[in-house]
Image (cartoon, rainbow, N blue to C red; front, side, top):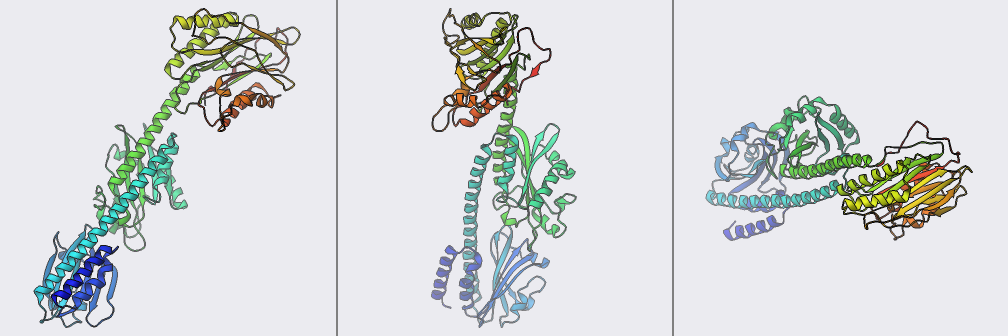
Length: 620
């Protein structure tokens, strides 16, 4: 083959290399031109892994229409000495001097007329190396052959590098997409255990075949979630996560180690992940556990079965360890994720988990404070069936300003009070405590509702309170004729409703200025009688202002919903209305407080019973 012909062949080879998705696709464009070179009788190429594992051999002899292809995973220890460095190496070797133990090409070369083997060995990537050689006779221009081999190898290496680069870019794009989706999924829940379960589900099968997630508690790692592509193995992983001492000890030893560690082969001996076959081969790369991208990572056994590899990543957020995630791999080495990707996933998971943990702590603190702002008990009497309900509406769980109470009075009546401080947070909570305890103290002493509200207003003005509040106070006094006198006084609060025993619903007429706005405000009372089995319902505006998607308020249907609850006790009415309003609203995040009192018709003198009735918890 003349130089012009070879130049044209080399040009076609470069064109093919720019389009190839696998290096093997270049074989025809490499072998045929080399075989057409004068004096060349055989072209043979090999692909090696781990210095001595022959993966592939392809040979094409002069006069043959089809190549001889051998795909294998045979170990050839003597071939290790042939492994090249970073630069390609061209060697001339007499065919007669080739040792079959280290040269699997020798048998094919002896079948051709060539007396010399000219071979170029070169490195493709960190996992192995390759060779391309020709058998030539004495008529060959060996120097020219060496030059053509070197040029062909340049194209092969460039092609392989391009394929790897495109693969890395594709994987990087897929990894970025997975990380973005993982962040969205994990950040969409503020429940700790649900966030941990999502961490496990997102990773399988995109990252690994299985995943276990542990939360770090003061007493050690606590198993939370596991998943696997196989349902049967998922159950096994859950058992391992809960009960396996080997894994528990490993996670405890890891402590605050920030690096992702890979384990395989003998490192898994004694563990539930140990392989019973081919494990020794899988251990060759397990010590190179901190590589990125195509850097060193643990290997897997050849054939259809891949030895198990596990990785453990510490979940660290805001300077503290919150847990760990263990991935279980049963896939080829090339499909194992890089440590940089696992670190990114672990960082995002840790932040989501930490946010959920902080939310949980805040939730417990807020609910505890909210419960202290509400009565833990309501008084029990044969005359009144009392109950209350409280639903927290703010998803961020700032302390709300709603409050209520029921206060027995010296004259045998009972005072009901409910109020709503403007806004949320610590300042609203402080004002809530002041308002409730001031009203309770005054009403316990027998102060009438109007005077109690006026004195609370004066106290707020003296304290220079920056927030206003609404409130309503209702006293219920049993009468000799079996009715009860309902005396109601309001300071800008939604009017109570009365559910009559016949199912009709009426609104108690009230009016009055907000508390904390002006000095020296007086409040007028409204009186009416209620009969046996009539029910008084006090509530905050979180109930009436719950709004559906179409814009309608729950207030518009509240009388109908209340009428439908005729005949039920106070506890059922309070809980049902709160839940209905909560389910009704598509917008609005205000708390919902209800206080319900049903008059039983027992005449005066029955008095309070000594046993208290526990309230339904004020916040859930």
